[in-house]
Image 1: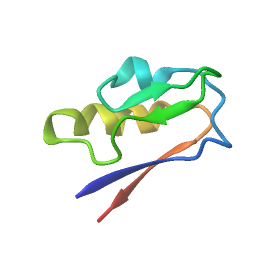
Image 2: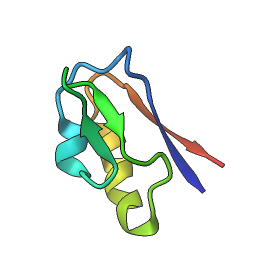
Image 3: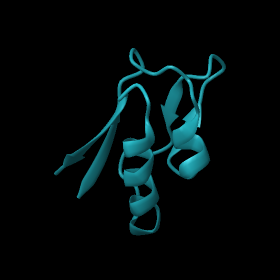
Image 4: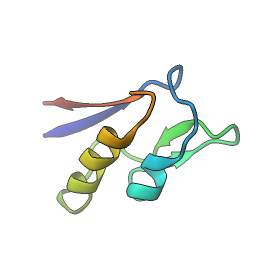
Length: 65
């Protein structure tokens, strides 16, 4: 099972993750990434993986459980 990890200390608020998969990612009032779920379903997993690769600050990562 795939798990998304977000390091809010590294996030620069570019919003690429939200634009790529809004079912998994959101931003708080300061523009910092907020996970709506850390275990995306099969429907969201592919786009969530793509969002991780697009993150300019490397704040997102994937863990396999």
